[in-house]
Length: 384
Image (tube, rainbow, N blue to C red):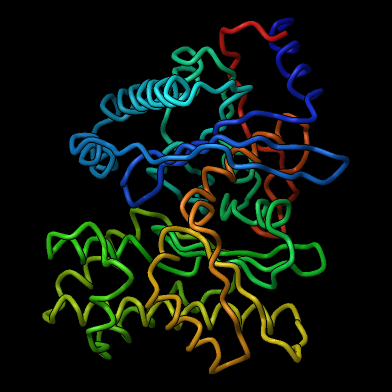
């Protein structure tokens, strides 16, 4: 207990923290590693993203993570443990490669199950294993406290929007799942919109491509109106927020419809882009109506991040559809922020956890109260 207290006390006294944030997303492309310096001054937090890269998963690990929801309990626990060791090894290689000093690691892990209605979520990647491998303090399990008090446990991104990217009306994060958030006089609301790269990438894989570069294939296609209506009429899209989506639910209910539809891949990609663009516009419209937001003379600004923000056709089409309802301008973040925002978010959540400040907001998740999420693992290196 004495050592544990010395670690947390030491970290909380730092005004500048050197942090590695880790994110493993549903696209299974690899582990995003972001090394940033966070400067804390009163209630403000600034950052400097120093180094970032994505370390690809082997084909074996991609298969293992994809199939994990179907395995027995022993295989599940083994994978949870081994994945923690794998992430620890990846971090060690990253530290050695860039010759950097690190105060602690903040890790999201890889989401396997997310069922907030049952007060359950699991992001695998054993924090103790990471701490053992790296010798550094590790903070993980950011979602579970919020879930335990009837929250959705997601989206987490609005806390980064609040501290690191202020000044926009809406924030659109396009990863495997797309989510939207909005700052209403300091109170954030946010929710998952629908499937993004979890549909785009598997369709591109049918052409032996990792993804649809710039959305060029989708741009060449035509909307399949029957398929579009089938997806849009699913119950989730008519529900009020707060709400969230589970990866496995998307893979079982949304993706198969795109895969089995008899049409060209270009047409199916075009339909998926249109579906997300329409739902993004409807999501913003719902927020405006529910929160009684005034329509401004100037366009609403939307700050776009996540890998899907590189899909130029998706961004253009989303802006066009939104402008059918209200004046809108989408601002795509700098490439390094687009790519590593979620890993950077993990670093920020770790900083807030160390300072004992709220890092999961009830206005976003629907929980009973704001929470300070994250379990802290000791590490073995001596803290000065």
